[in-house]
Amino acid sequence: MSLHSTLDPKAFGRVAVLFGGKSAEREVSLKSGNAVLSALQAAGVDAFGIDVGDDFLARLNSEKIDRAFIVLHGRGGEDGSMQGLLECAGIPYTGSGILASALAMDKLRTKQVWHSLGLPTPRHAVLTSQADCEAAAAELGFPLIVKPAHEGSSIGMAKVDNVETLTAAWQDAARYDSQVLVEQWIAGPEYTIAVLRGEVLPPIGLGTPHTFYDYDAKYLADDTQYRIPCGLSAEKEAELKELTARACEAVGTQGWARADVMQDASGQFWLLEVNTVPGMTDHSLVPMAARAAGLDFQQLVLAILADSVEARG
Image (cartoon, rainbow, N blue to C red; front, side):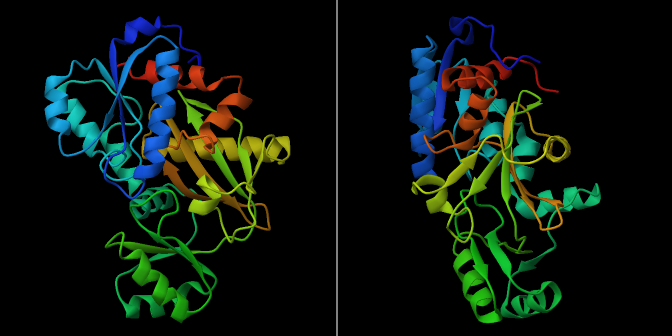
């Protein structure tokens, strides 16, 4: 499947770019959405923006919308609910369908699917109480990383080294999500790999002086390092791309997605998560990977939009 859209920009009709929303990732989504909207308009697409709020259903009914470009990060846009609403309304949309969106948003169930297929992902436990924290510490050891099960952009995440900090991190993460995940800490380089229209793009190696690639490192810091080429041997890079393809296929992603993977000291790769609506800001990784594959930002958004034209399986 070609990464380049050969469609006339006018063939997309009237395109609603959906961004903002009410999730914890609202600010990132506003930046992503405005970047996508500007690029589509510059390409000649009849696009307009909708900051998804309480009046969204009324806007959906009152506006002529031929297709939707979803740039909503987190709950309400990346979790299958918006996808279901648009399907009910008969409006084609970008990215993954209902099931893959809901599954990828749930880090715990994504890991369970990967486990069932023998794909490598760090050992984990679910935290709902102080007793769970103590049991996880005994079973998994330290250090550990705590994550809300349904948030993105590293929101609510923390690295912990003892039961006291684990308990505090669980309580903090529980403010975002009733389901909190704790994973074994994988020490080593982190990679992020974008998939566009069935093709795995060049992996990006991440470097940060932060404890991990957190919200600040993702969106605010100027000292985050991005390596393309990623620094792996050709053989290991091919292995990483193959693992990413299998991980995304297991979840059922469509259109575009981005997987995050760690590598330990022995060279083993470990799957962390898949994002079905990755960031599209000036710090974002998918546009960076697309550039390495020969696509500028405008060509990238047109390729993502072109995928929405094809019928879903």
